[in-house]
Length: 182
Image 1 (tube, rainbow, N blue to C red):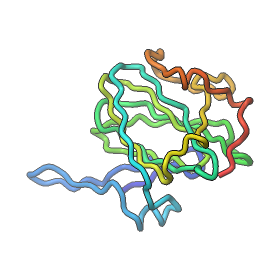
Image 2: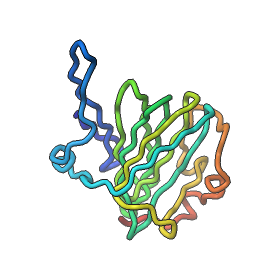
Image 3: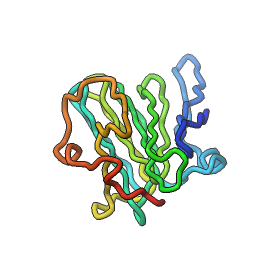
Image 4: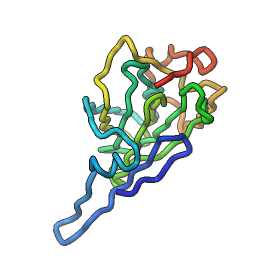
């Protein structure tokens, strides 16, 4: 696996190192020793999959507060997505900054989202499916969200938003959030 640090501290793009032959290819998605060597979570407590039918669907920006703060490992299984991370960690030099990675099944790339970082994505193709691994089980009482179009963050979503949940429409902006301390 190839670990490429993103502009948000502790966040990585992880690309597979494919081994190919006449049958096709093989690549590792996870290796405890490699993740541990990069200081990343090595235990996954929950796995989820989402399906978004329409291009432009936006999910996020979501995070969990302590004591349920979670790291995520995200991969696109079908379609394509514009994956976004926003640093919400108190005291972080990157507080309020965002970064993005385009994920497709063809690339096989994944994004590692550290604790205290909000995550969301927009679909670039119809019928996009996303796999999420979570380091901690979901706990509703610790969920949080950041408004997707907060001008103080300034995420440059690539498409007009076609579909957005009522819950995601109601998230506060960055200035109304208490910083997350993982």
